Length: 130
Image (tube, rainbow, N blue to C red; front, side, top):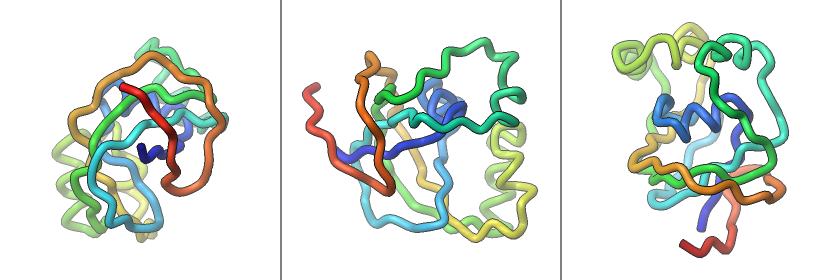
């Protein structure tokens, strides 16, 4: 199954259904099941921003399963959509007019028991047994 490695706290925000888009500078044609891997990296500023949620932020493990259903160019129109959906969660992308990337739309997100594994760049494969 395809996997994407994401820094914390963003991986957990996806796992909890709070963040429904993952942002990248590259686009993907892939649509379908994907595992969410919480990488070793953290965004310290974002961790402070979301500490009030009192969530666990595991690192170095697969923590959720989802579906990529679309890959959308981040432009002014998409920034409006993100602002309406959840301005607080998507604040960085909304405010960063220089970000010229894509949002991978995630649906059917479900938490799974953590699986310790090292991450990789881009989309990568993992032999996942349901």
